[in-house]
Length: 263
Image (cartoon, rainbow, N blue to C red; front, side):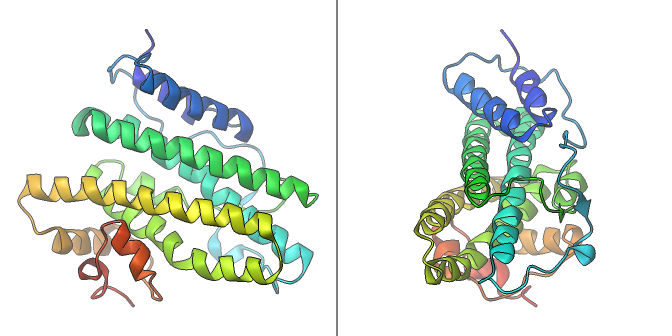
């Protein structure tokens, strides 16, 4: 029987986007069916495989999208969302494979569930791009999204604090405004996609918060102050309003965590 980490590593090292989606869903499916051995005999790669396109650029070099009403700006929006979801597949896979032995089976199950969701989100967004005459890889993309994972590769508590509870939580904040723009443009299909992603991301942030709280309890530290310490240490950006307080609270992330660190 193949080991859990061997299957996860194979998915992480799959560069082609569609093949990565299939590999990720297959790992999650085989885990649910007890077809993977609980063995952590393979080390996760520091950097997962990437396709030749899109070109990855520093945030300061990313071209501006322009006004949302233009076809070019709309394609740029959907492309940026597709890239976020593509990297999110690897973030969830790495979480399960890198920290699963330490954190246990529920942790692995939660983050393989997240990985399968992200693969589905990417597939929806790539299909959306193709319906608009484009595809993933047609435009440059943000090159820094994996940095938070690499920086926190030694510490599961820090990884949980930064990836689900800062980066994914930010998605909860910005998606409603994007939804309104897409709705105003009369894009019903886009509205359905974003609504599905928002609903799923609340659950994903909830998984991260749940396991972070368990880490804090194990360390005997107040979770809010521990989170703030880790954010200050490992997150290079700032935690900025506006916040989607209702979505964050639904994910277990109360204002006690982030109000004082918001800039």
